[in-house]
Image (cartoon, rainbow, N blue to C red; front, top):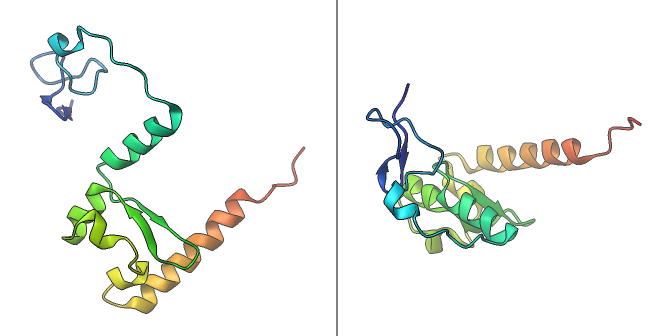
Length: 117
C-alpha cells in the first residue's frame, strides 16, 4: 500500500503511513475539534490545496484564478497567472485555444438536459 502524505508529513496511522482518514494530522493535533468550514470555504480550500493544477477561466479565455499547483507547474505565482490568456501557457497558442474551445463544448454538452425522464 502506498504511503499517504498530508500537510504535516506521513498520515497518522500505522508505521507504514496507512492513514486513519484525518489528512495527515497527528492524533495529538486532533484533540481540539476544528470548527467546520462553510461549504463554499470547504470547496475553495479543497481546490487551493489540490495536488493538480486547477484554473478558473473566464468567458474571455483569461485566467481568473490559479491554484498553487498550477503556479508551481508553470513557474510563476498565483497572482502572475491571473489575467493572462489560457492559451499563452502553450508553446503553440493555437493548440491552447483549441483545447479551451473543446473543453467548453464538452462542458456545455455535459450540462445540457439529456431528455431522459
